Image (cartoon, rainbow, N blue to C red; front, side, top):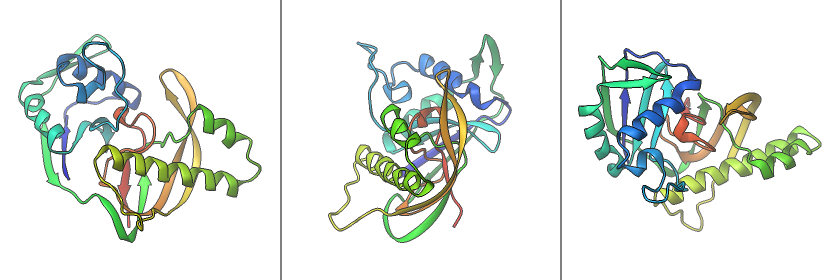
Length: 221
């Protein structure tokens, strides 16, 4: 799979401002629904795995694009985006660093260890109610494992990767709860590590709001 990362080396943003970077770029390049995931005619949300994700990696704001189609859009962004506007402040972009590579993605006979470098928002309204009423940590971990597998399967589906019937995804995890703010609401997120027999390229997101930088992973083993 083709992956590109566009780094804005001279810009400093807080994680809470990443959604504003996404909003600004989405408005400037409104013709590309892959950026903002809204239908241009109706304004309704398009529910799919985001192929363009806005993040902070190693304290540097960046945009990650996945698949050939999304990477092509980067050509125009890279050439024409000379400034951004955050909270009424115009910030010139003096340095841009574009990295394009082919990465492995998909089921594996090997098991890999990953770390969430930004909080994973795995719980929706329904499974949050289930989670808080579970009696012990094992039951909570079992639920989180099932949700994580669901996230991987959902991501695979939207990226047109079909697993064979005998290809079963396994996970193990070690998480700690953390507070996150999502759309001005306090929610539970998780930080920590997980193991799985699925190759997830570095900096891809799992779970909710990955387009805003949540759930970004990095392989550590």
